[in-house]
Length: 83
Image 1 (cartoon, rainbow, N blue to C red):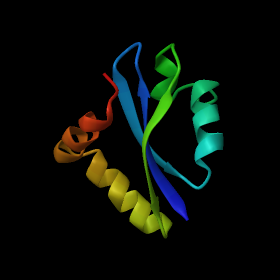
Image 2: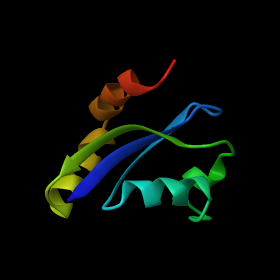
Image 3: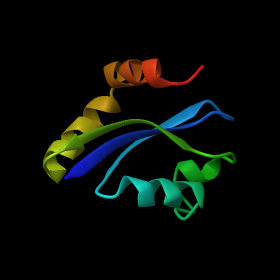
Image 4: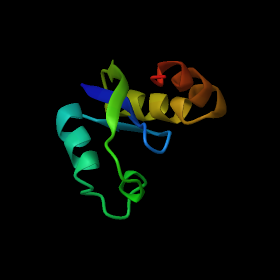
């Protein structure tokens, strides 16, 4: 099982879309800035999970991740951003 997820940084009003098999570990890696040159490491403040979707295979997760990164996908994600 794979999870497509969206994390949000309230301090900078930014979100990130990714996919993983272990969402708890991945969220910890984003907040610990483990990916030094990654997008999420550029911003201070914490990242919180605002959306997740479980999919049966990596291929389906990658396709859904691509959909969420499109213009319409970003518009869909905005409804989950806390106000």
